[in-house]
Every structure is written in structure tokens, then in C-alpha cells.
Image (cartoon, rainbow, N blue to C red; front, top):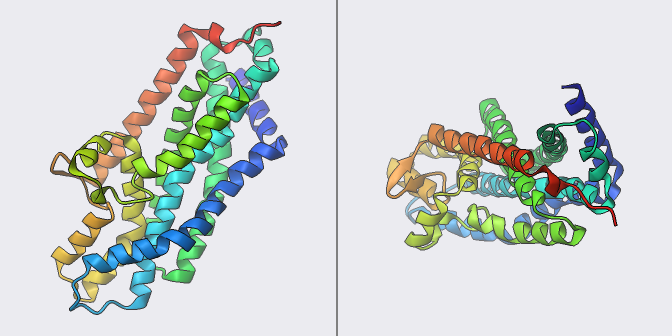
Length: 303
């Protein structure tokens, strides 16, 4: 435990000492917030308007609250994974600089070394994502606030689980990388593509039926839906209080992925948590086993 604590402190300090890595990780959610609010808010507003019958009069504040909740859930769903890839660059940098060689020849178990990187990345990513979550909640407060304290706490839990998922995923991929260029390329690909496959940029309900079935196997999809449900629960409750028919509310929930279906069966919130939690545990197990079974791949040969 003492060795693990030392490794976590060492890796965390190096991350915050490297202004490039820290700035890149911190600026990503801010850029996403600006881009989403600028370009995607109209798309989300049109999606909401299309799901509401013309005979219903919807207050602007309710529309703004719905759009705001959808925006921040998308931002946080993407940031929790993409920021983890930025924070996990240290693992690859140690291979590039040869620092990993000094660590692997020390009396430290490969699994302890692996978890040292994991927990350090987890801590760094959580700090960045919780700061991003605070900005996002501030944005919702300006647009239209319908969340309760319980909703906010659930969002905090959702972010924690998604960061654990993103950290485990980036750790496994980072295990096979050995240059700065590789991790930068992977980070770019993840930043560009993850938002689509998790339903953050465009609701999965708007994809083809075959693609919807394929994406229903991905854990990130359920993480996005969890954030959507908790960011918009108050909005749906307000709709019901204003007399929206239940079928209209459900149609809106379907249109923006608050309701997910696995081959036609609705996935409950508890099942989403179970899928995400099991996925995190499996990914962490795979990451540890990779380092235990082939620790020599972590070492960089001296020239």
C-alpha cells in the first residue's frame, strides 16, 4: 500500500507539473461547452420541438431547461472519457523518457505500478471533470434550473463512474502505446469519435435500427443516458405538472435517449448502473492482467 501511495503521489504531481497536459485536460470541457452551446443547442431545440405536438404550448424556460440539461449531459459524457486519455499521457511519457525502466527494475509489482498510473489518472481526471460539472451546472442555472439536490448528487455519481470507465479504457489502450505521437493520435480519434458512438453528439434514437442495436452493447451509451436522465428528471416532472400527456413525455424521453432499449426491451436505470459498474471492473481486471502477464512490455530497452 505504501508503494502504491508513493506511485500515485509521484504520478499526480508530474501531471500537474506538466502544464501542457494539465492545460489540455482542463480546456477540453470548456471548448466542448462553447461548441455545444453555439452549434448543438439549435439541433437539440429542434429535436425537442419535433417531439412535442403543435397543440401544446411550451414555455421558453422549459425548452431552455431541456436543452441545457441535454447539453451538459453530452459534455460530461464526452469529457469523462476524453479527459482521461489526456491525463493518462504520463504512462506513455514514462516509456518515451525511459523512466518506466527505473520503475520496473525496482522491487515494485507490475500490478502495483499499473494501479499507480490508474489511480493518479483517476484523481486528475475527476478534478478536471468536477470543475467542468460545476461550470455546466452554472450554465443550466442561467438557462433554466429544474434539478433537485438529489439530481445533482446523481450527476456527481455518474461522473465518477464514467471517469472510472474512461480511465480504465485509456489505461488499456495506453498499455500498447510507446510514443507521444501514438497517444496524441489516439486521443484525437477518441475525441472525434467517442461522442458519436455514445450518443452525446446525436441521440442514438436517430440512428438506423441496426446501428442502435450495435451501440446498445457499448457501456458508454448507458453512461450518457444516466447523465441525461438525472439532468432532465426535473424537466420531465415539470412537463407532467403542466399537463403534458404521459405519452408525449415518453416520446421526448425516447427522442433524446433517456429511454434506451436493448433489442426492444427498455433498459432500467438500475440496469444501466450495473452495466457501467461491471464494465469498469472488467476493464480494470484486464488492465491489471496485461501488466502482470507481460510486464516486460512496459520496459523501454536502453539503447
